[in-house]
Image 1 (cartoon, rainbow, N blue to C red):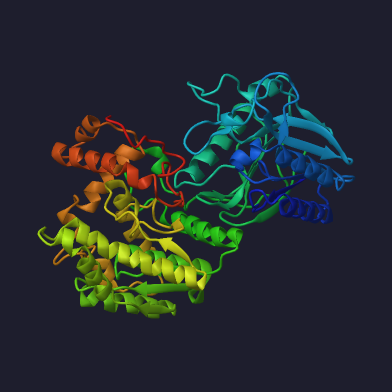
Image 2: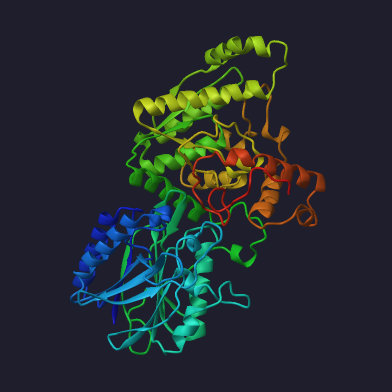
Length: 558
């Protein structure tokens, strides 16, 4: 059997465009002599359409798309993912389904059993789990078709009551196919490979695993689809962070003809010790994920140009460099906005960065505007000492300038805040926290430095002075981050234990961190929740990002 794996980048809600892409790939598969073409989970509508699923006309249009696709399956079978109505009398209104189309007909529909309801997933909100399990017979082979999470219900403490593969094994299948929309994080590549491998070794069956590719606002799908033979050997791995297609030929003995040599030497051992914080974990993958996130956010929303505040610091430098690589230097406009507190080297470094990137920039001093604000506020402020309010006026002045230019020129403001700052509340609401998309909001400060080193690996793009000077917001004389925060290596390690590992204050202190510092970090994290609730979407690259995957009430006392 010749199986064509189609790893495609879809746009949520672009039913016509997605359907056209699928049909084009079907014809591509036909020209290569494929018997079966496989597409990813919810390929017709994109993953995940969220509350679009509650709109009846959305589901109706998807059914029309299924009808259109099946008209191209006279001489080839197709597996494509889509939601479908639950015609039963109980349960949720929809199933998350895989359609098996052949001879211009719907030959079978397989529904997803294991509906994830953790982190960024919310499938139980919309879907009813499968209640029956059946193999699909095609070309003399019995196919066990599953959807994403269905193959993750392994181990001593399974999350779900039913394991679809256990049910399907009763029918003695010859091949496993899984269509998936598994989002990227810096652990996921290894975890995904391990999960597919465990299924293959447990059931002694080959598996074709087709994963989604592309960024959908904050979620980034990295593709990296896999093909394993029944002996547990990885025969094919499709591209990571890019569309890709692969024709594989399954032999009668459960192996694949002409396998592509595959290695995973680029992956590190973080999965072996997930409780340990790594400042430099999978930096290359993180960078590629962020680039895809920026590129798709602009492409899929019809945007073309970005504007970024250039402070001469590490966060804005990395953001600008990544944006230039993703969008083209000519499409990234940076604004330097020095105040009376800005150091000469910050202005010089910021200019040098833009010149190195051949990216347009402009300098707009904010001191006149800042003093005008103080004059207006003098009746209220006159008898009070300089403090946070005056610092925030500077940040909000810069934000106003950036948004004014963005509005006037049709640019989109990219935010430069990192995860350490967002965690500690070390940012100004409606100031440096403004933006349409957060590029580094899921990267700790130490990881930002790692990304900077990666950006500079071939030639100097980010000036060395930016890499080596002490971080500072430069909102008052002689201000440095470490006057308000613990050293970043310590801060980041504690935050990692709190956010990614869900450790308590006492548990973290028992790891050797100063209890006083742990308490301070916990307080900073909790007090800043209201700021994060008002923040822009964050490109997700870690196992636990701020946003849809982390739900903490603003008002709480825990």
